[in-house]
Image (cartoon, rainbow over all chains, first blue to last red):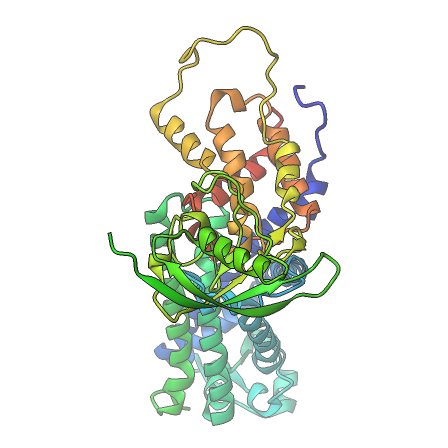
Length: 257
Length: 253
């Protein structure tokens, strides 16, 4: 014991500004990882209704994985938002009087300066997106679509007869995610909303990824920092271009019912 | 050597005391020689103001050779002015041209309250250092030079971090008024040396705790701090601070 006065452990981590940054970065890794997987999964829509609906059926058929992932994501998202709000409060309080003359920044980006704004838009979008495609309350007519397995031909056929669906065993019915997806994006207003949200997500990610790699200690030296900034922009571009392709493909008629 | 003189319009933050509100005031200054330093230009202004019976502009200065860290003013929206790696005292008026308007205001941070005009109280930085930015050495005979071998790379990095003059430009430049570049540099120059190992864990924990207590903001990786730093302390200092802090949370040495 060499230090006479040692502060405690986790209590100081939780209260400190660096602790909040670590929370932002680690939850960020989880959320970015999810975004990549989510986008790749949805690319299956280009392989046709059967592949897409089978993918959705598989996810729903493994509730342990589904709800395990959902819980991790929910906890990650909540912590990410809470840490962001706390940091913003601390940072605003750290400069009660603004500069009288506008500052001239040298290297920071608009993406970095408006993280909270882009983050709040993305958060609002996540809530809407869940209500739209996961819970199905905003457009129930598009959401409540099902396919029934035709046992003789082993093919899945659309069936909207609710009385029949209620009677059939669960393994013979699956959610028609493909049709929900296409009908959702056929509405130009909804397609537009998704496109705008994705552009803000791109802005958020373009700073987020480099920032998180830095906080986690993976960018020692100017060259590594430059590399991480490029990695961040590349991940932002891949995720968002993939996601943007969906409403655009539907609107352009490349994906149809 | 030419002796171009210029006429400048200066907009300077004037504030009588910590508790009175301040405002930007405009002054016209003639006969500014291009070889003057920025602070000498302010000396000329102050001589003129004094002669006119006005209160001179208060500003911090000491060595005027770029190593003491006293001068602290945001010039045209940038701490220490437009030149990279240059303190305000080493900024020369040849950077400007006749007819220019220059704005000057103090560092802005909760942890740097204004004392008067351009002078702010930067004791918060000293308190961070006092909380752990030192090595405890029992005094005795002088140790032979090079008695403790230190690798070249570590010696260089320690020296680069030790170049910090504690001026506070990093805080002034940061959109969040964070002092993590300063604290990182102070932690970094000791952690790279064998002498800094004994108190390694407690040092970073206490310094970060003090930094937060002083009311500095948190780093969100804008990198403005190292760009504004007159000693060009690398942004690596913040990564080092994060890692040292994380290490201190999980180790017991």
